[in-house]
Image (cartoon, rainbow, N blue to C red; front, side, top):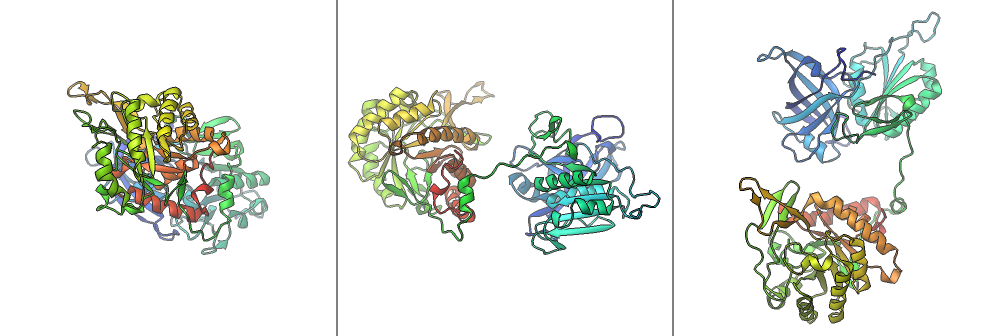
Amino acid sequence: MSDTKDCQGNTIPVYAKGTVASCGTVSGAVPENIVYSLKVNLTAKEKSFPKPGQFYMLRATKGKTLLGRPISVFHSEISKPNKENQKLSDGQIEFLILKKGKGTEELCSLEKADKVDILGPLGNIFPKPKSAKAKKAGDKNSSKPKICIIGGGIGVAPVAGFAESLEPKSYDFYACFKSGKYGVKNIKASKLVVTTDDGSVGIKGMLPDALDAAKIKAAGYSVIYACGPTPMLAYVKKIAEEAGVKCWLSMESKMACGMGVCLGCTIETTEGYKRCCKDGPVFDGTKLIFNKPSAPSPRVIEARKNKKVKPDLSVKIKDVVFPNPVIGSSGTFGFGVEYKDVFDVNKLGGISSKGLTLEPRQGNSGIRIWETPSGLMNSIGLQNPGIPHFIEHELPAMLKLKPVTIANLSGSTLESYVEGAKLLDKTKVPVIELNISCPNVSAGGAAFGMSCSTAGEITKAIRAVTKKPLIVKLTPQASDVVGVALACIEAGADGISLCNSFQGVAIDIEKGRPVFDKVKAGFGGPAVRPIAVRLVYEVCSAIAKLPKEKQVPVIGIGGVATWEDAVEFIMAGATAVQVGTNTFANPNTMVEIVDGLKSFMARKGFKTIEDFRGCAL
């Protein structure tokens, strides 16, 4: 294998802005609009154009993803010296991209003349075979190609690019797909074998139906090059070793830097963990270790047996049934009626009101919101009309809506919390959410939720004055969130909502002063989700160890923006989720989550939320 860092004619990576020459779907790929051809014009030194087997980190310049995506080179050509700088060359690189996530979706949405952040070429290259055909006298296979090239799915791209560098008819090429055929337009093989799972093209079946150790020996192959899904590569390694033939395998791994510094893309080998981006992606097959992939959760496997499922999204907290697990989060959805002209709020499972205090509050002075990458800081300060006003004016309108109404109860003293709870207990509000987690008030708020003793004390006090289902909303700032949650449950909480905003500080660099008058402010949005999932996972794990009669539901909060986010929280143990910041970015977020959950459950065979709740614990 060759590395990119020596001075023997190997490539030198460059970070540049490429220009899109064209981007469109690849004909023959099934289903349609899933595989794209992206051609990028690049001006760089000749040594900064790729060799067979290498890849680039690509990111749509106008995109929103943080990281580039590692994409193998399908075809490249250097056209001519650059007119403005004769030391540079103009060239074009073609990539085949499988659209399967946000990053690749952004790349596949590019248009002509768009810009692409491009880093590369990266990684090592396919080592050239010593000879193309057998020349041993008397060898009955002397006229047959000695090279075997195998590509599976989108893995066809790099090996097809490698095949272009070989003499025509000097190799056999095996291309394996689930359905259809693509990426073989430039291949000039002695024999082209295509397999498809559904039999739409070529041999019906997978690689084992076209090639095994006996066929490798019979064909007289001396070397094998392959790229494709991991199970296929494990099979290639196995049959190559059985046939006593050398094989080179191009591997894939999630990457961040592409330069070998982050160590996030390691591949297990007999020589230890090797970097896919730097030591690979091409590896000597004999040195690779293919471990059995982790099996899905037993409940995920069990659900596969269910056919034509009509999902029931309803969930229950105490004796209150929510039509689905998607709830508008307190402080981000007003009282529900504000959005009713924008979308059908009756499709939601519940609505948690603006934080309510016994007396009206004007909230905090100064700047109240501050956008950050992947999030929003806020310092509202619980501005609200007061509980008496809410009961007379806002509550009746909320109760007319189909989602379950939740009154979010806040306060500054234990006494004000208790008096507010007494007033709410006399109403028809179905559920009370005890907010002991607001980060933006000087007294009360999160102070009550910081320790097990104070959290338990206030929960017990509220429990004593109301029989309504009581959810306690916790702060992520507590040093022992699990302990606080268990203390609340012991004191009578019927549920836990976790978690409220994290705390942060923003500085106005022009003024050299904190942005917010109170310096610290709440922070929410997609950036906090992994931490919130961790907290929910830990709390749900602890609750699962309690006696059955003491177990209560958890509502996950923190950066929920998609149905996938909701599924993640539910699999971590949450019964429901609250959606906050993302409603500002996309008012349809919650409806899209409900629809996405329904489709996901139908596809996976889950009849109810409970079928997969906590399956990751």
